[in-house]
Image (tube, rainbow, N blue to C red):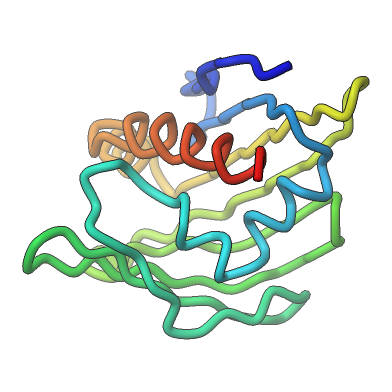
Length: 159
């Protein structure tokens, strides 16, 4: 049974952070792999308006680093970060930087939980360095990229 659902996005009043909770009709290991395997990741990340994404480097292990680009027309949007803690099937803690705004780095914590019936829940919390940076992140249209990206991931997970 496939269930269509939206990610629940919570902006915290007391700290400069955003939490995204999303359930999937797939085990936590499969959702983790979609975040850890660069060949899978580029197939679903970001809004539908992107032309493509490709990985420059990707070393998903504790102490590893990553960098990828998403394109839309002639625009290139580069992102990079470091993997601080990786526990396969359970947890990814990483930094995230949009390169044109390199002074603004967020710390992300992705927790992958198995639910009953072969389903799972992803809880992703991003902590940024100021309320202004958090509000800029939210106003950027990140909610569209999150919702559309996870819908694409739903399709990939059914294959």
